[in-house]
Image (cartoon, rainbow, N blue to C red; front, side, top):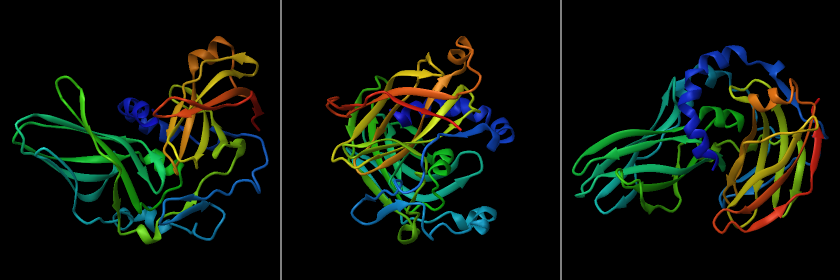
Length: 319
């Protein structure tokens, strides 16, 4: 699953964050060729707000928010998120950390006779699937303060400047055996920016697949990645079921490669995700630059694993 794979890499990526910021520039980005006009407007409905593409007047200059971090952080009302046999998790406030980014501070009380660990299965911000960084263990009879951090890189890639709504799926597990013992339904937190939250979807690019209420758009190729190169995708799921998408039979410049890509998208949500090709795989095939590639996507139900569709081979090139 997308967020769990990225969470495992988060600590490693932090070690090179400073280097990445300095070294990465627009010369490392290559667009995927195709017509980016007309066929890029999407609507994602959550029952309250409709999310559309980025071609409207809501994208205004945010110079002031870039220079004043305090004003950019919305507020929330204190709220009990869930309770489980003496375990009480409460959202306290939204915080901003210069290293870890934006997060939701939580207070956890364990009034039971057992030790519990808590994690987040999935975080969704403004309808976009976001990687989270959170795990907390609380011993019997103890309390803890911790923070659920939301990936700043995911927020940036999705074009989310102000957080209006956060949806969280928690799970509780035994800290000794790691066995899951409880999973929550979706828990929604609305911030002070809810009424004016970002409704733009950064979906400009080349449409690779658009059928069965699933849309996959190739945005660009990121040449500067820690582990190799990445093909950045925008995926929207308008089906009435959670889906997982993988890819197979992938080739770059005519050479077969092993892609790293599995992305889960909940019903009515979207995500910005990427297919990673390791440097070792590229070096073995003497590939220094991605000129063209081909692959097949497979979409299946995340719960039953039943295949929804396996596409024909899709071929496209970069500029």
